[in-house]
Image 1: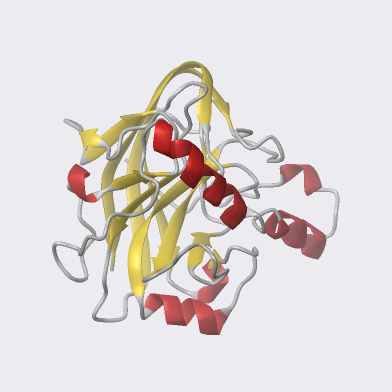
Image 2: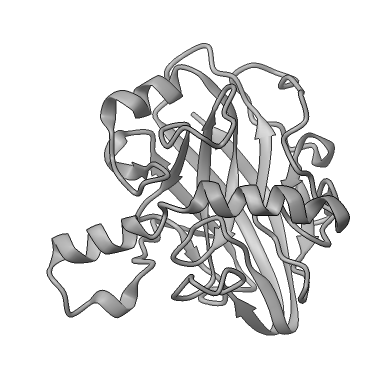
Length: 243
């Protein structure tokens, strides 16, 4: 099992620009995440996946459930409502081909004490995959996933209610077919909001009022979806914990 920090720049084509321009441009790509998610609230209702998180409480406080039924696939056409049990991990799902796509996976989570890190262990088993990160045609760059924190009561209108790990994430296909662990500090400099900005005060407010955690798939828009244009790929969650 490979245990390490993986950092990525979702806009690699900006490498010739200054550091501040690269960061500002890549973060700016998140601005329309709420709008695109709202579109999928409408489109997903006919094809599978949830249109909003169910009103569920976590089974245990200060613990991330690994039960498949406690995880919800959201805003994702032609996807099931939840992942399925996995013999080699906690749960799994298969990446769909068009017109399907996978966007958000979340589970309810409430904290009663301050924690320092979020760690995920996962494996993407693939055979000749052709990942498509341009489900939203305005997205750019490789297909990725990032970790997600969401505030209680979020209705997708508050730019400070969802936070993505940045720059830590995973580029699909880069190290498939091996178990990987990512660890992200729960500090404001490791997370960005819907507008692509750090905001220490608002991030701390979210930590004090977490409603769900999970991961999202996309490219330069972190939650705008991924699908397969060829080959096969299965995502398996092995562990997900906040500590």
